[in-house]
Image (tube, one colour):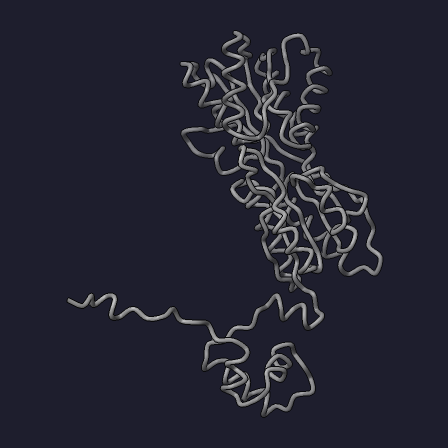
Length: 350
């Protein structure tokens, strides 16, 4: 018996090409290309013939190719460290909206891949694509593994670094939250409740993590709390934070409060504490950093530092647009965004 499904199967529909439009309109491919690239030396009759043929076929031009061939170069690439991080989604969304208002198209590119051993490495294929495409400008978001390999690209097209410190002298600007102020806000909040023994889980995994660890040490030292407070080494991940807490518990070094280097790490901290039967915040207060959507989940209710993610995205886009409009853009500008503390249940008792 013939399979009716198999009998009805046909080859997948191929999207129309510029060649199809030329055939339908009975003109050359070069004329079709000229029409879609805004060529002026085309008669109205022939232009309409091409546009009507394209409409009948459902043809849509390749905007990237169109932009490059027309010499307008209005594509801005946004290279994102980790597409799964909700913090970066907010920054990218704000930057994209700002660029769109200025008439710029954007393409979002992932910066990293897994090296097979659980660590991130630079996605060489995507970097090669950016070199070939040569967009008008580039915004990098988050700590990019192997950022030094982007130096050549940053030297040839205006580049802005957002929410990271991985800058080279060639970047137009670095836009990030003031980590010193942000970490100090958390510590001041905890100290005001009588907390004296505080640990920061972080310091590894990139320059931002290291910067927050340094800010923690300095703030603790200013308050004379160094004897009972410390940095427990961990990366940005939930698993890394869990291991750090398990280490502290095994060595019986549980502090009164733990500051995680980001919200994802804070989830790992809370998970490890609760697995050990330690209630949050009664047994140990916890705070995070970045104020992502995770922090507002009622089950977590995480006190966290809002670094101004949308402001970072908008200011990064503005800095890039300013550079694109300048004949000789300035280099090395640093923009620090003032953070604020969002207090929730994870750090408050009583």
